[in-house]
Image (cartoon, rainbow, N blue to C red; front, side):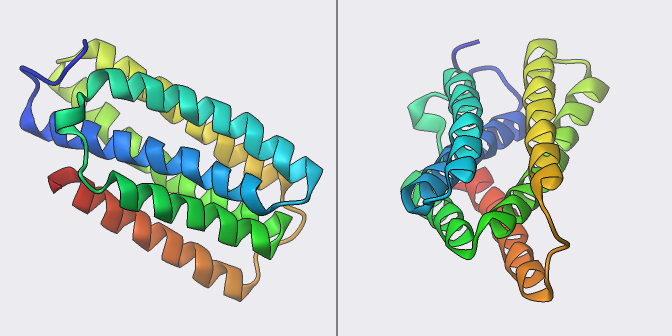
Length: 176
């Protein structure tokens, strides 16, 4: 499918959020790469960015430019800043941030997959979103496994802000 013609309005809106989210995800890793001097963290970010870029390309084929969020420049900037701030705070902060983001994305995609499964429509889109969700879960688990300490309270505040920002971004991307 190369466009959103004929899809339910809720699915068009959700695909727009997916496109915005994958755009932001690519930028999170670009932000990490822009500021880190940690070779292991850079390798982690480079590998995960390649997956996110692939996801963005796949979602871009579903969402024509006219149906994408007009706030994409904002999502790019906020994604980049999220990655840059996390990397500035260090390796564990970055892994904790990625874990929080990917936990949110897992739930976001799962809701869509469940609805598509229930409706019985668009099996190809359902399978794509479920595959992307599984990749995000792998990113979450990789980040979690790389952490060397339990996140401090200040880091939990940071990831809480990141998660809240993700919720707001999804809401806005759904309508704008």
